[in-house]
Length: 235
Image (cartoon, rainbow, N blue to C red; front, side):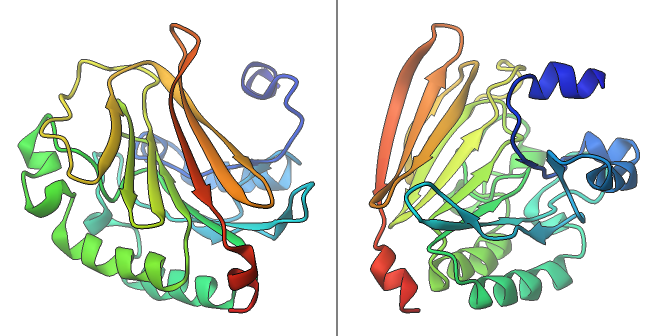
């Protein structure tokens, strides 16, 4: 009851959940089981695809949640829970999806600017967690027309573009001084250590995204991703 009141408040809608490494320090199974008790909390398993969601404009959306942490310590895509199972699972789910808009989300980002602990962030090729992970997941996202990848974990706000695909990192909830996201990734189109969040809107023609500075209550970045929905329908 306290959780419902403080977090959900008056937003009586379904929340699609993905777990991070702090969740793995506790009872992750309990969070999965909570789905059976709540109409708003949706976490049917540690990784899952959502039912089709239809917007007011008639656009169909499907969400694909990856589980990127198998322990309570800092996680990365290479150490993903059941990595060898999630990769073929994701490809199968994306291949059979009839959604016009496909969004992948997870706790740990796949692409981001380097910073902080080199042991964790790794000053490696293209400033990504692992070259292997990028070479595994990025072609899958591109092959099946994923439009956006939403992640958190990093204590800053960042947006990166890889062709028509956009990566949104919304981690500016605190701990801004823990890491210095430098050097900036070559694909990064926005990067800032601010307390903030992202806001997204889907229309019949585009996915609109905003980065909001919560401290100053202002929009600091905007991105429009045109959607070729007719082409998506024919796939």
